[in-house]
Length: 224
Length: 224
Image (cartoon, rainbow over all chains, first blue to last red; front, side, top):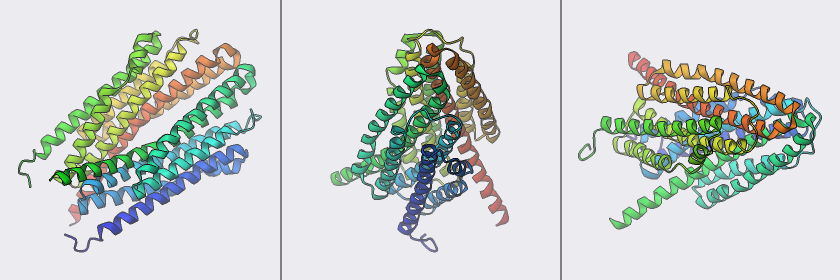
């Protein structure tokens, strides 16, 4: 059966490498969108809006790699769960790329108004959400449940920042109708960053699922 | 290998039945949340907020069924893609259940203010998003790409309604600061309904992916 079929471990390593590359591309796009907002840099915003062909190509390639691994090697237990998780993570990363576009769209509208305030919590949300995404992918590759749990904990901080941003901007909107439109765009951007963090927690949950299934298997093996 | 292992087709049918049941539960929760908003029915809203234990239990059961099918039967080609898609759809449906909670939270806040306006487009968005979800699951079970394509087309209508809701509520907010808070909640609800539709389009895309992969396989077979 293994004749002419590349070794499973090598193929799995290649899959993980491509998934990390995809994660890097998605992170870069969110980072650019937030930086474009903070610096009111319309060319950076336009760059994000111009499209994400490399991410879309990688998305297809990674899916193909996953299905090839499943079909040719018929992995069991932990490996099976890890590869199915890779299909889900691939989707999560594509959505993060889409969120970068949503952020850039709102940032583009925002730059057509005078700034509502100096932006502090929104870039902080961006940094945190991207760190969570990076850690979640790291946790997946290393099957590190401790790091995955840390990502889940950080989600509370991100939610707290979102609530703080919402309350502060609401105050502006209630006191000055001229801020309603731009403040609304900032609120939407904070929601997109919260969702970026949600994708990181999805990945972290998958990591815990993969490894806990492994523990169950070991437990059963001990009994037998 | 098949000794003691239930037949693949029966197990697959059972999986699809559970997935439809999960879809029904998720739909019902979104419907209740929107109805609670429209009728300002706080007990219906509270019911949605009370939790989604049945959905969470089904989520785990469906995942287990998928992994059992993959591990015991090692399906190939279309069946392999359909079962991996079922894992993804399971996640989509769980998220729809979460969106129902988000809608109910905003609806709860909304009922503490006087109504901004008679709600027409938001219940329309709810009806459309739920019909899309229902059709997408139907398309999955029947592997019906035409119905899946129809779901993708309807997403444009949903996006159009979202933009219309946004513009109309923005006008209220700009003219009357007293409407800022409740109008903001309606805007957030319209976004949650848009995302409910996004989950339907995810499922519809999976259907097309499963069946188009089948076509590719047939094409290769013809060549050989």
